[in-house]
Image 1: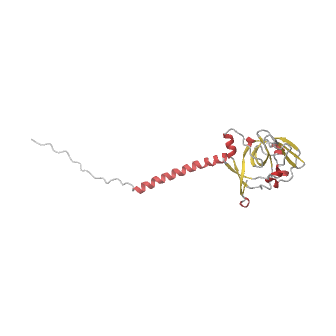
Image 2: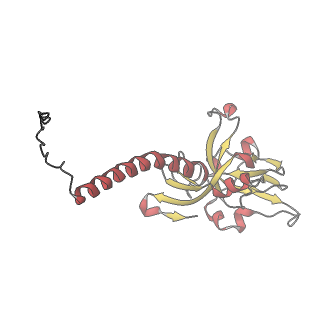
Image 3: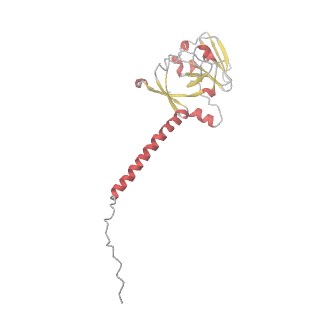
Length: 220
């Protein structure tokens, strides 16, 4: 009896193990990926956050013109606070600033005064909803329930020290959702004496800070 020959044996070759990166290198790679993703996220989110802040919280403005001198001068850099107006809109109310506040608002229908339509102006609030404002003989007088005989805000509030004579000869009734505004430089200001009281819905915000020039930085 003849035995079957054995099947040929294939020699086994031992391959060297695949090189693995050291633990420190793997950790560095993960941290590098996280850093890149974080940077991309910041680049995407930062503009959106800046836009939200500008639209609803605060915004920087530059004064253009002399209408608020000597309180504000041409090219002054300002910070305008928008949050009260934003909150009023969220809650379905009208934002009513205080008398004496300096506000930025959108002035409607300025074409007849040689100005671009929907221009943003900065003026001071002197008349509030429901009041009557009169200008006669260089004096601005406000009439309301507390002062039926009238009072002069320019003479009683601190800002009045900077107010010269108020030119004009007219009277206005301020509506329920309106305020009456004037520039501090009364002889050289386009304001409610020309275009009447403004709608509270057109108010952009309230001046809170002048940041430039640095020597004139001031809170309002």
